[in-house]
Image (cartoon, rainbow, N blue to C red; front, side):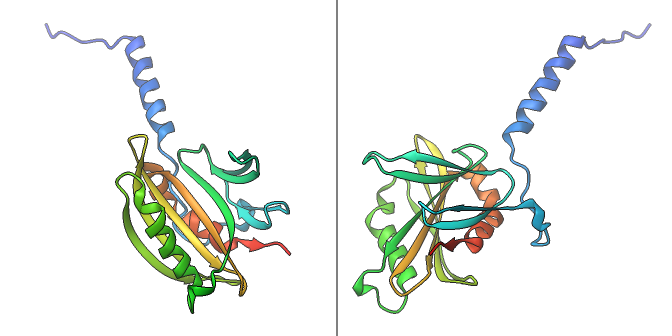
Length: 192
């Protein structure tokens, strides 16, 4: 007589919970093509921060207070560990020459970013949007023992101003969001 093994209902329930917990840790894939419907994004503007941007699904604005007491707008994807954007207006130094976005990107990499634990500069790129020309730094580092990715966009919007859009997040999430961070950067508009 053959012996049959019966899996208890509690074992099936435990397996279901494990699969659900695992699936919630994986972000949904980024859209494969730029043909995503326009209704999927929503316009967001913050006059105090000085810019407007198209927010994609999963991204939300939050205000934070820095150590010096000033308000900073943060744009977060799901939670801070997945991706966090801080945008800041920078004045172009007189010695930056012909390519201010690249100059400011190189300076930040050489003066502050290189001192982060396990910092590795991955790529420098040039790009243009409808309103700005820019530079992009992509790098990795560690924060509290976790592998992190940074993607900093530098957008020159006029002769005196470069906006630095600093995206950071855990590598396992952030590396899947390149399409989305590009879309946010390309939709960026300074407010008058």
